Image 1 (cartoon, rainbow, N blue to C red):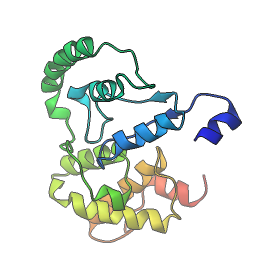
Image 2 (cartoon, helix red, strand yellow):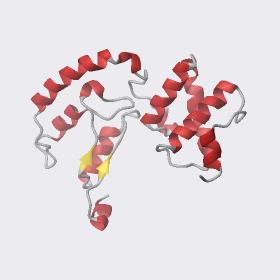
Image 3 (tube, rainbow, N blue to C red):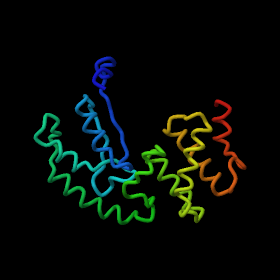
Length: 184
């Protein structure tokens, strides 16, 4: 990243989800290599398919050359407010709060995981989550390994859900899958 930053001359921004349990390490190495911006979330809204906790990273970087200068006490006070907000919105939770090491193999981003969980919950099929993760790996391979960012991650995830719920691979293709395969 140091060479990239020198070559392009603009700030480098890193965005990670905490699903695999490695995001803080990625951020630290990115910061050491010259990243200018990292995405975090206040602790009540962090981890799982979200970003690492702001307060934890501020504390970890305090007193280092990368000290953010942010007021940890103030961040903790603000986080107290969002604990209540999160409780009020609990019905919208994905149910994917912790580390899922299976994602190290499946390589599915946090936003896609939340979407998959929501789709399965809406179909009363949350118990099929692991099947859908396995199917998403196969769908991605079948589609030529596109990068797993929106919108391609959503196309792959939705097709994987349909394949699993239909009980037959590609019996039904979404319009987005058809369009992707047609190169649109």
